[in-house]
Image 1 (cartoon, one colour):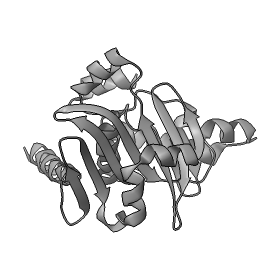
Image 2 (tube, helix red, strand yellow; image 1 turned 45 degrees about the horizontal axis):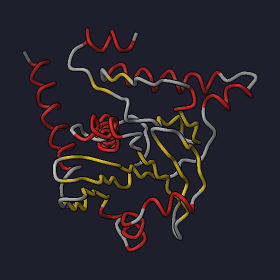
Image 3 (spheres, one colour; image 1 turned 90 degrees about the horizontal axis):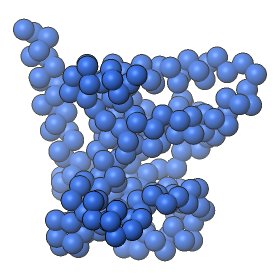
Image 4 (cartoon, rainbow, N blue to C red; image 1 turned 180 degrees about the vertical axis):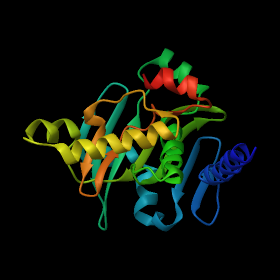
Length: 222
């Protein structure tokens, strides 16, 4: 019927939109070699970003550490014209490295999910670049670089507000948009929402998943 055709048309538009986020085109600069894969918003690609992508670990060391976990390290980095957040997905040990080597990296998933959210009109982080260290088809350490979002996380903000009704409505709206798009998050803690001036922003994108049918989504959502 017509409804199915509309869904099908939207899906093929979305597939085209998301495929472009992983190749060289008018919007993105993409460089792929045996040892690395890099994609960056073309308008953001300049000497400073190039230097950062050549040695992201040095920028993380010199930056302000926001999170230093086993599986991910997050740092705020100030460039001359803007502030960026670098999220490095760490390889914990040899076994972890082996299991990760054959999968799409979590940086790849974050990059994909960020543009999926953009396509769906759901507010999320603004992605700048994604980098994977590789050895041929095997993936190693990976980096997801986004614009810095100013604002406290929902946990901090809601605990200090006497009557956070408008903030809760904004969060409920965001969850409703995810639900309508059959997207489950997988790690929906309050600290994964930043309360920016223009509304809440989801910051942990690698655990997100879009479900092909309502039943699978409903299980994950519940």
